Image (cartoon, rainbow, N blue to C red; front, side, top):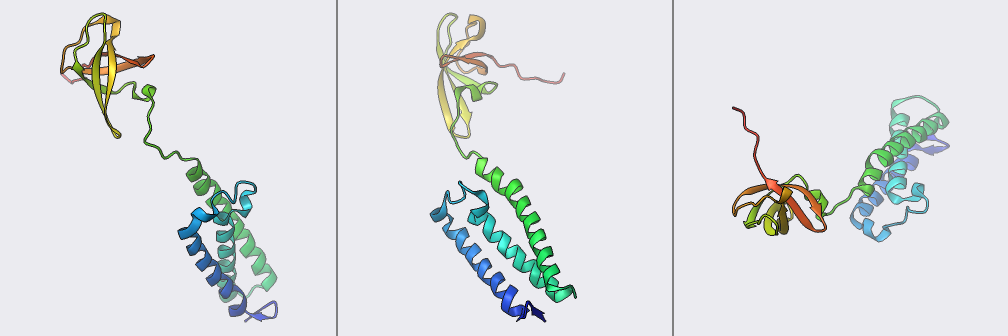
Length: 177
């Protein structure tokens, strides 16, 4: 079978193999090209390489499986690759780029968590609580909600954070009667 005067194996198959190898190399060495797609996202290798690979794949398969003309097959291949590349970019690559990978926390993010009093909290003063998180055990300054004293060892619910001080209330878990 011939495509544009060339055997199918001489056109689509080498492009498919080379783009597949380059994609694998990009997978391992993508840090070297980090930021290359910031100016123009369509030139990002993570977008361009799958487009070429998908175009060659669709072209090769359609040339072998159908009796359509080479120009029609190339058009179908380009359209199919563009649609799949669009889906890859907007539903996989963009969310991954904007995903935040961090173990950092803010004091406000601890609101609603349950902690344990390790230094008793007096009526008009400060004590200390510990909170277990995925980051480890955090020790924080605490004051009682509405200036209520809280004894050592009690579980407390963090109500709010005011200037680095955790305002807490004794925790009363919900129980069915």
